[in-house]
Length: 150
Length: 405
Image (cartoon, rainbow over all chains, first blue to last red; front, side):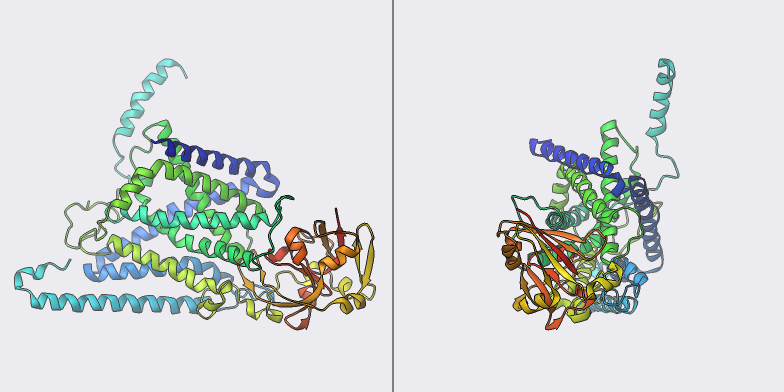
């Protein structure tokens, strides 16, 4: 470890300690017990549920979708999934605002579907372009090279 | 525990740790690689850095030091910094999820800890992960004004940010060689479509030939982050309004073109604000008070000032009012006075706000917004508006002005 790394790590520990100390110092406002539950719940939700859901979807895709198409499908699903994560609370809370706030007044479910359709269209186009290009390459090459689709 | 008992357990524990239990998950870590982690992590680090810096700027609005008052220029300063804060925070969500996905197998490394230091290091990573998830999560819920918790958002969001930053710096210090190695690894076409030889068939995410490459993951998650930025930024960046499919606020749809967070009914000021006995009381060396008619007769200064909220939305607006300095001077104060404005509200965390320095010199007590008399919900009869100032501190329903030294 170089000096710079030790310094950076030391600074990190100091700031981490500072933040934690303040959380406990202002416990009336920060409610450390409830905050602790939120912090633990975040780990459980992410590491215990969301991550395994992704592993499961990946496994299903690998099992049922052929290689070249799968890459594009995975890509589209990653993009759409990440956007959905941000959109989900908006969809859930839509319409629950008082008049005048100009808050959460859009139809976020429809809008998410529009975004998903755009992602699907771009992904499908990219896939078709690649299929066409590779078909051309294969046609132009001698038969020995046809197995490689990398 | 006695010595002999300790000596007996230690080797047993060692034996237990030497072999991975059969049920322990295994991953083929070819897609989830240092090359992906280092790249996504670097971008996420920059986003967190920007978000932290702009967050501190916003927090400074709550309690500025007397010797360093908040500047009044540029007038759109807070609009920009808080817009950046919310956009980088939102973009951090897809980036963080991708980053965590790329290192998920590390959660199941065997043995779980090689030493006490290694155990502490892993603990600090757990702190970083959970604090980051909660920080961006409650930030997202806050811009929806959804508070399904008892703690104070402002306090938790602020202090947890220090925890995130601290554990992040520690993490970077520990992982610096790995980050360098990952960034130098340019094998982004991995895993090659035709290669299955090194995949463990029992691994839960082992994939047969084909599938997405590392580059593909980077493009897909980058696209996710980009779409989030593009479709949410319209509340701060006017040109992006037309594509704000996931826009939380539509500032232009608020009454008189400005959204309202706290109504006169919520603040319980409807009666007081419309009472015939309304007076603005100015205290200082030479105290005085003004009736509604006197205030309206004095009003006539035009200003174009954006109003920018801590939730990231902002709107440009035209105001007509009285220069605050005019009343401050009459009360015996100067441009260097510290002035406290009080609302008709009986309670509420933002019923009072202090202003000094450049913001005081540029502040307006507004009677009109976008060409019309202020509505009750916008702060009738009189509200504060100052440049580069967080929305909540532009106190509405003014009842008193205390001119200090």
